[in-house]
Image (cartoon, rainbow, N blue to C red; front, side, top):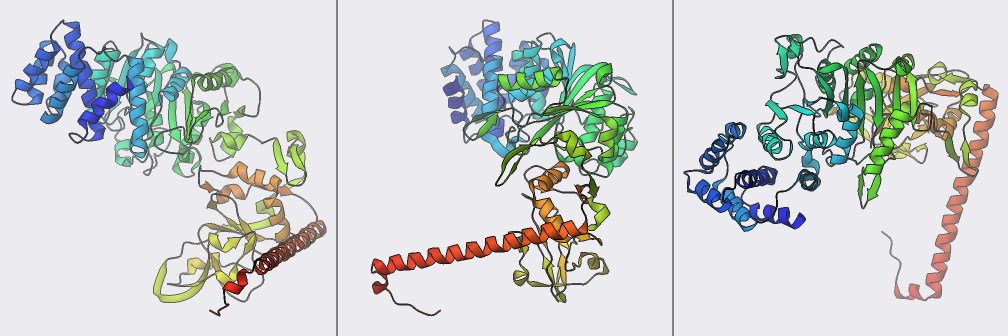
Length: 613
């Protein structure tokens, strides 16, 4: 089978863009199935098609003859390449004894196409991930399934494989995708798929009345990322969908979620695949999350492994929506961290059947708090800015303490340990965004790269000409300030030493200015410790690039100890760190000296002469 379709793609190379390979492959399979079903000669069919004035006309006449009217409407304006159709005909005739590709084989081909396209594959959702989504959405026992943002047809075939009797509905903004679905429906879905071309946020097609949408028992959707919509469209919505707050202009994810909720049967379920940012961003998205939580519409959130999608390394999340949660989980949201539920194959992370089964079992059967599954009261989530990232609600019980080993944290003891929030002992603000201006004032700007090995490299900070603004004053740092990255691949921090120079923190830094009674070196020591890193991990957001939001950092808890004890531990650590660095320097010098002696012993220096540069 693999050689079969690769041979077809090789024949098409140079005739059409690779994005069109699938369309031509399905045309080949569709023509073959029609001829096989009607005991018609494949050779004569292609001769007739190629004898027409153009490929579209020949295929339209052929499909009309056998009642495939839905395909006709799309072929009429699909601009088929005549040379590519000739290649298709030659390939089809050459392989006319090959059996039709079944749905399992097609899914394998489709996934290979996604894999080869990489970043151009959009989110690139695998067959196994769609299988997982359908199992969570209850497609197995549903009478209908709906995707309002269809751009991958493997979603529909996965639904059919789980439940051959389910009626399939889909909307897509793409004309080519609709043509592909029509062929898929004929080939593999027993003509049970209804697909419409539309933008569901503006004008959904599946409606009961002018003011009411059709309802579906199972909804599985992966909203496109980066789609922006105008709020005017929301205001003129006829279906009362967008009642949970304003939809962010930069990301319409929650617009699609609101559409899914309005399209659900009262006892239906919806599973939405999203990337992380809408789950934790503040502003309009936080307001919408809070409204959805307070109306108890979110049943659960599952964090999936990074690099599980073909188009991005960012870890995706599944949001499970349910209008009629059972009594045991009302007023709560189930969080499942499935970030380690994958199988490594080479450089790829994939979901195999056992991974899918594990996630489904953990989600539906795990009733108690565990390392990866936990039910959290809605009130607690709302108090945490309605953050829906599962990581935030798991206290990692095991941490590594250098020089001691792994330890297990007693969550009860940890919670009741005497602590205080960071904002109680320090004033915290972000750095400033400074724009260069060659005619302006020269100032020194501290950037993330100026913090190295826990120290601020003042001597390497260069001056920059800027047009001074009063708003820059909040970025001026003082001796004793603790500077910490607000975004990056890892947390970094340094205490501002004594200096006469005026320095300003850039926008990627956070200024933590200790109040009276708080030692900045004690703060740094604690935040860099495994315990402090645990607290920072609780508030961090993002995937590859982490962010530590100011609002959340202020809530970080630190041990409450006297200033005298802070000085003692800070002095002890500072002295130990000084000895450590001096020892490293001495060790490096000893190594260099030993190397020089070896070169001398080998007589290498007799071959060179020293020069001064």
